[in-house]
Image (cartoon, rainbow, N blue to C red; front, side):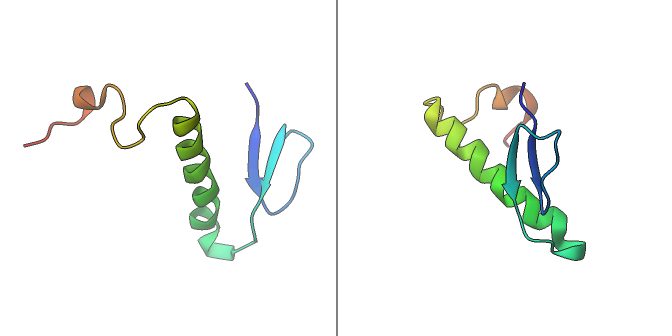
Length: 63
């Protein structure tokens, strides 16, 4: 697998680096946004519907 780094600074261990601004205490929120967009784009690329994930019924019960 590849290591995708999401941080303000690049590191030699990253295979791919997504630069985000240093937001102090809000860094976790700022860092998750590119990961959510990446997950969406990968789902679309794989022709999976991101609104209907496989095996969702096994983990979530809707009443």
